[in-house]
Image (cartoon, rainbow, N blue to C red):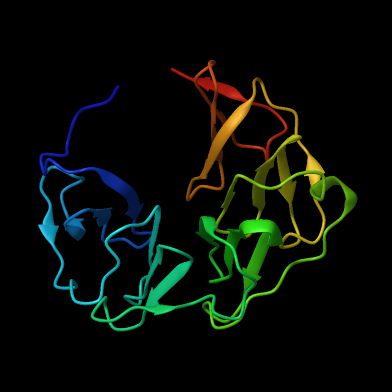
Length: 212
């Protein structure tokens, strides 16, 4: 079941939960970044407004306070949000459409025609993992990654999984056409489908259970 917990009266563009023990929630919307310490019942603005992008579609907040926002590419803050710089300036022209990080701090991004790109140095440099034939068929539309580094990506053929950082992919069988995925801290994965609701897998996408 779901309960409305947002009383700010603005559009939420992205929500991020802390992977630490603090249980913090972060929300990126028109007022900027707000934070909740009580599971979303109340929200407080964070003191990080100057230079913050006002439009974006994704948000990552790391335990060390670094912030990544998808806003005309990837913008990163190393000072708690006081300033933001482009984190993808060496990449080809294109727009980022998805951003995720695994437990080892490796960043993954879908970047225009470049497909899936990967950074092992907190976004200073980006590279394209080796593409096998199964991952080259169409452009990617979404991705998510588990803490252990299992990478799931969605393209025109359906949902794919990589166990080696995007070097090779295997095709997964899903109950219905998938439109998005979310990786949980317990290594399970949740997919959203066009018309059949949401499903969860706890075995790497081999089997799925409907979420009621």
